[in-house]
Amino acid sequence: MALTPLEKQLLNDFQHDFPLEPRPYRAIAERLGVSEQAVLEAMQALDDQKLIHRIGSVIQVNKIGKSMLAAMAVPTSVLTEVAETINQFQEVNHNYERENKLNLWFVLIGENQAHLDAVIADIEQQTGFPVLQFPLLKDYFIDLGFELDLSDG
Image (cartoon, rainbow, N blue to C red; front, side, top):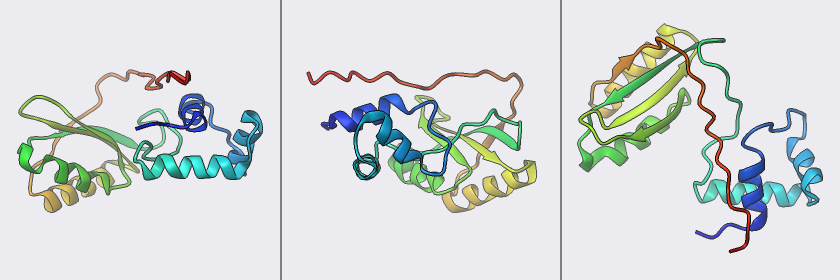
């Protein structure tokens, strides 16, 4: 999948410090020397290619709400379908497959524990699989920014 130079730069340069202002894409465009429309079109192309899932802030867990790590044991034959169901919940920050009996892991963020309990119940009802919940015992910060090769080669 080939990315345009602008798409690469957007992915690389705005993983952190996304402009917090009324017209952030205009600010990005000015910084990159392109039009706001070009930025919007590139972001739409990245979304259409499913290279970005969302644009939003990352807030320290449990500072303004509640978060939890969850895991499920899902047969590989329906893993993609179950992951897509989970992704429909706005409370799901991210999910990923692991090579283990518990092969589908995800992070939930919500208003409070009761909210998360309701989401877990919905996920279990919609997927037919139980969700194991893992409480936060120690807080770690992992910077998930990735440096892209911006060369043309």
